[in-house]
Image (cartoon, rainbow, N blue to C red; front, side):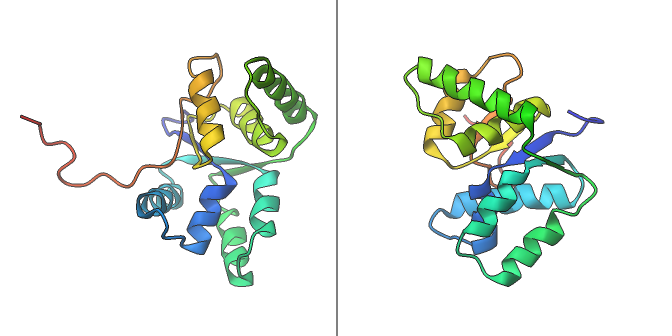
Length: 164
């Protein structure tokens, strides 16, 4: 938390879902758009490793979508983190720790996680199955993001009704 607001991290796949308006998983798209809206309304902060920009630009997305992404990333409540030595060192340690537990953590995913850990992220959103599995395995570890899962759609009027 920073100034009473959560710190989010959107994995590249979440940005790609937003920019491509991928409707294969409607709940994922609604959740991703809701996270984007929370950031735009300044209800939270966003931390993003520069690797996110690289991965978004490598995908099959239009030039207009890339411009929209670049404009979005200029907001005052967004911190873009260079993939420097601190991030790389922690990422290497995460890869080794996962290997010791018979899990595979890819280098780019490790860079995202390391950035999130170093910058005190509260909610890490991804729809990367192996990455969420590692998140479950690591849950409760000191410094680990509180939430590592796909983003949830916005709450509805009926979400808080008691169940009988």
